Length: 632
Image (tube, rainbow, N blue to C red; front, top):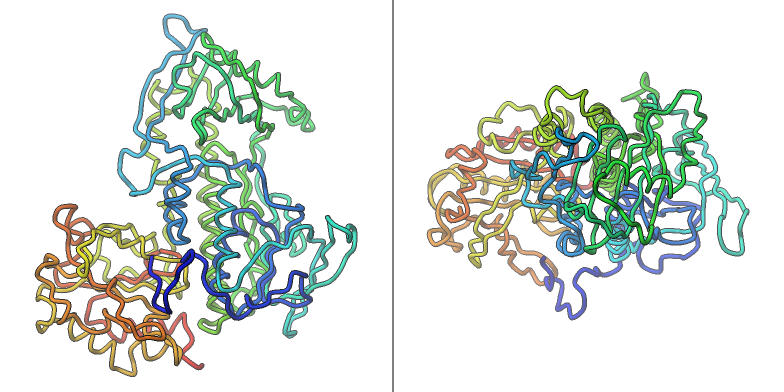
């Protein structure tokens, strides 16, 4: 990470100086605010963390609980979430706490003795190497703690307002703060008291039974699967040999188990199949006791035994697959005619089984998608139309998730004899790994995602998909660096210039483009960087040369890639890279054309466009479609 450019920092560099609304921030929930977030789950905390980087914006987050979440239901962390944690600066710390999944084993009835189970297959968890980050497990509460820390340490100093519950809202178009929200105190001396606060925008992150969703008339559409599962986090003694490996376990007569080892070396989670549920059950299955769940687990595990010594958490749930009809308050027929004022995110939008480990992960991406857009609009950098892209982008992702989860949950509930082959479940897990890992999302062309006209210039960076990081060698200090690890959650766009063949300083398409970028009044830097901001305050430009780092002369690199930043005008040396042959030439690894190109990356790490180095008007026009000109 970079610091000291505003003066020597002797303390924790993650604690940024308070600014704007973070100065003397009132403890009491104010009457008016720019953004009101309802719910401190994953989506809500990501939005708060992102908006903490915008001190011009007044953001408050209310939560009905009296304090932080102590134990969460979610625990699976997919690689895409770890990439996001990297943007918020805590991936390495959380990874050190977590249990990392490297394998999944499959168990089925023993053909010689079908009442017992045997291991039938071992699989690698990520055989395709789809990310440098691991698939891992850690309690949701710890994930929320890290996002809360980031939000509290940001310039806006955002902290949850615990003990407030959402009641209802009304929208009055034309008012400065058009959303009037009734809230009720749930803790402290004011329990039961109601008051009305007003906001420019409201985000409902209040779970599957979202009151915000109901208040804007949105419908949670879908059907139950009429199948129930008991889930328990336990400390136990067992002779089952794979207790510290993720396992799908199928018995002949008693159903199945999904076994998930947990962080800390001793705790593990079991999803225990409770079987089909009749349509007339009236949720009676939810009365299943923990003793009954443990007994069922032992029946499935035969000939092995499970002696549970402590239950950290348990629940019973019935699988349902639902997606909300739209993720904001604007009626479909009025989309594009007025800006949305109320949004929903996370479980308020989509509910599904827990076995694919998607709930928290997809909610995090909902929050990341919406957070920077709210920041850009309220900070005056982007038009309100940008907010329309949230529902358009994320609803498609949610539907794809539901479709995938329905298939995975159905396969987990099958009896062994219903599979065409004993390896069918394992094959499905391996061949579909990219989807649950979070990397199948591909946004359609829009004001922030370009057409694939020039995709062949960088085939390994598909437009609309997340920027798949690769290593390059930083010229200034010869450090191998994952380029994607510089994608901080600071609201900036990243533009990677992959140079054509000539060396730094030689006449080339890159040199001409860099000169235009730095000097022309038509360049994005001139048009969209506010006066008084650092030259890289809106766009983070980096260059990757085709030469080895010894052959790149920093003194001849175009100045736009060595910007002067901060009050002292210090040179930022972390924007100039060369290929790293020892770890793989990035031009080869990501299909970069040797004539060079530009790869534009959104603030939420998704590739927005690929353009040739000569596409000056096209570059400026792209940003003109989603940004406001400086001062306008």
